[in-house]
Amino acid sequence: MDNKKEILLRLSEIFEEASVLLKELIEVETNYADNTNDVNNVNSNNSTTLVKYNSFKISSLEQMDFENVNNITLQLLKEKGLKVKNYNLDILESEGLTTLAKVMGQKFKTIKPLLDQIKKSQSSRQRIYMDLSKQPQEVISDITLVANLAHQAGLLPNYKYAKSPKYKLFADAPLSPIAINFFTGAWLEIYAYSIITEFEAKYNLQIFPISNAHISLPNGDQFELDLIFTLKNKLIWIEAKTSDNFSRLLPKYKNISEIICDSPQNAILLWTNYNKDNPIMSARGTLAKMTLCNIEEFSEYLNYLFAKIAK
Image 1 (cartoon, rainbow, N blue to C red):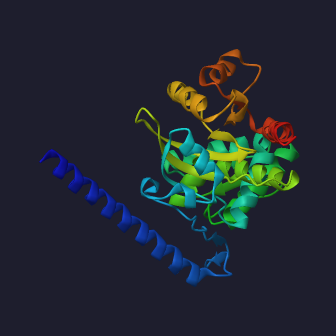
Image 2 (image 1 turned 90 degrees about the horizontal axis):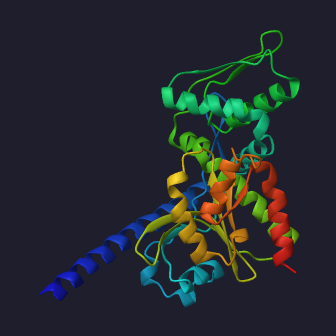
């Protein structure tokens, strides 16, 4: 009786997962038909609302034959005893969001006051107001550049900037789901993805990147990997953090790093606020068995890793 009940429950799960997969495939086909050759939609006030590309998601990989999945990263995860529930093959949004994320990564230090104001505004639902009159010209230029790009992308509504002599910046709270997702961390993942694909081209390697992989560890714990790819049969894992509130996750990171990566060098904790001169912060890398990188060091470290492994 118990076996029959288990079989029926499992069949119910399979049918449910199949239903989700079919709905996703229908949505992908519909959006593809509607949006082929269309990257941007322009709204009524001439700001640009970017169309998010539908990543090809695979659900219920436990029912699939991994031998027929042409992705080395997935094969290596399976060989290490991990079950992958679903994942994205491509996290690139549209060219506009990728450009915005790259500019944010390159100018993070100077635009951090804007990002802090955006997060505060999303939390309080109050308008953004910034007085930039006492800021250096570089800071003003970078902040207004990012704000303007975000506005064009439809992420920063009713953005206005009063130039000299006022130097005042205004915008409505960015509360759309895509804006909340982007500014609370997705931008850093897109930035990291863009950098690794640049090195993929530079070193002429195929790295099979996947993002947001929901995995089940051998002990049954569930986890989502931000970004993972393969360098010559070695798994490289990147976890992206824009806040400091993740110390409770360090033991889990350590467990995952030991399972997935051959060395802590191949497990990268990209932490925007990381200060390598702060020993307390640096201790997190040791506890997680990961290599800590701030955003300024990330590209250089990836270049080192690609060059080392690609020999």
